[in-house]
Length: 489
Ligand code: NAD
Image (cartoon, protein in one colour):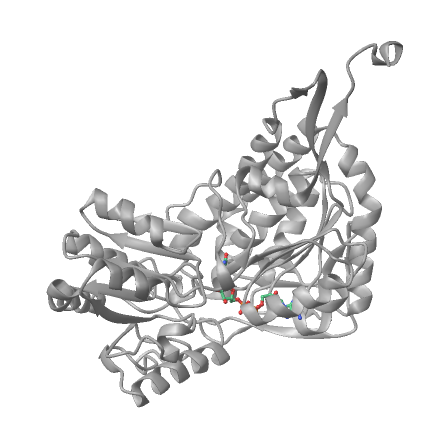
């Protein structure tokens, strides 16, 4: 197996990163670019042996890292952020080649946020404290103790962004990490290992193991020495991980799928509402938070649909490396088939295609046309299940009650977006929506100080700010008797 490959002009090591060393596996898997089917790399195909070695390395590195003063941990995280910023273009280019998302988004939005993830949690660590308080003369002191080795498992749709959302707080908290990136976009995780090493992160503090979740996952998630598992991905995988983690009762954080609504009331700024709808095609619809169920108040539904159709027709689909492109390819032939299957079954059961509804035959490859479906029943598969492609449904409602009922009527609860010009309605509706995040007249505004996560099948737990430290630490309350109590006792 060749140890390095060159992707978009960048040398990427395709082996694992374990205990500060590159480690190969007997087998490899082929990593293909969704843009044009080019083979990018033969990547180490991890087995239980490498999973065990990575956990062992993380376990060995833990005591020293946990004992490293907070200020030094924060300094190293900032040094990693510096490294990300220095290699921002390289990371953006490799990520686009690997997962097909827009290069312009990677350059301007995603990779700067990757650096920010490290800076934010470094700074948050330094101000993390709980005021001491007194109980009958005894002082209470709350501390966040590092928990131990953490296994972090991430998906392919925003690989480095989602990985560093976990890596940064886990490391800041004084934990060591085994990161398992998704097999469809494994490359930037390897670059992150290089960057962390260059920044001076001690060996074994961050480990990266590559491979198929079905082959290597269980060895990681059932390992009794692992103290936390944080997973972002699909509901079926989450169930497997939860079952695997059950024996050791390892605490889990689960960020899962969604089927989020966009509620458009008649009092909304309709152009803004249309802009919000069009945003849902970003990353070819492969966004967990995407508001893929548009619910529109009846009197404005026709006009909304007309404007959305017009605006969507101007979206440019094509090579994600081209500045002018709005929608790139989907990730994998299996994903394209899955998307098309959802649409075909919806149409067979009575849905009407307003636009799109098929792969983009002009472009071929993995491009699926931005799609809008109407005439869909609330209990139909297309309304209830996550498609993870550029497919939106549109339903109408007559009353606020009906809007809320439809919005909440899936097994998910990740996010909801509201378009309305009425503050009183905003208050009423927001209070009744089941969702980890509600956006009002905006979308995708994210701040790491806020809790992030989903309700119901969209997840377990919240991340962000202190919530991340609560998850990645063992919280301890130390109660100290008043001075001199022995002499009085
Ligand atoms: P997936 O569940 O198929 O895979 C995610 C990761 O889990 C991959 O690294 C995979 O290798 C690993 N994995 C697979 N089987 C495993 C096992 N048995 N044990 C341990 N690990 C295993 O998900 P995906 O298709 O990569 O990602 C898409 C899904 O992720 C969608 O459902 C999407 O909504 C969700 N997602 C959620 C968020 C969020 O923050 N809520 C963000 C992005 C994506």
